[in-house]
Length: 332
Image (cartoon, rainbow, N blue to C red; front, side, top):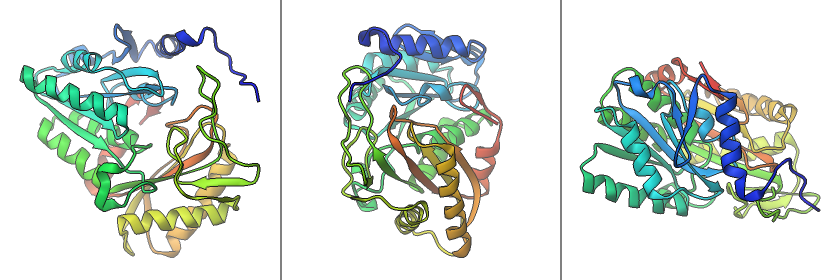
């Protein structure tokens, strides 16, 4: 099937989408050289600041979460591609207001290469930076091999709790410890029923049959080993909820965050039906949802499916999640 998207020259996709994003949110963010999306209030920040990086094509992630209470600078690569380390260094230097910088990197090969090279430069220049990696996809590695896990939608709540901790005036070490504690207690499982097309090339990221679904598909169409016949909303919810509870060893009486992140072409109708099933399953297990979100945070173009995210919560993390923030695509 021929790709149909409202684009111009594919070579200009990333700059044009960033120009549009920042033009639509001039009160909150600005576009700087090197494809940096910057919090307009960064210049006055007297606190720990937060830098993240990643490829374009997953909007509103990642740059849609730049602003007060979340990310200060997002470094944007080409479609589904990591930016280079020099841009990340520029972002860190721009963000550093004397209190240190938290550098959040999703676990994908290109992003990790850039992240590691950036941290080498950071060490050479003596900058005060701590890197936190988000790696919560339960489909492609067990928890004991977390370094092999892909980063999915979990980066967004990490930005939120870390940004809130920074806004409270905590030190870089304290902010990083909170972000890491949250990251260590989160898990995501994705499901897809139809793949996406690469907006620059028109190539399919995944090819699923008319009556197939795949539980465990990665962010860029990577296989997850869970391909099979299409299931109902309740059946899908049960498979995914139970997998996440098992991975996190959530016990009777615990409190969790639950996020259903649509990946581009799945309707809110479907997500609400799934959420209804999740809530009933968890209530029957005496597990309380104390924080939630249903909608699109991190998409994969027009991929049909969603990512189910779960995290163990405590009073501090809940307070940080609920504290004020003001970004283009998340506000409190």
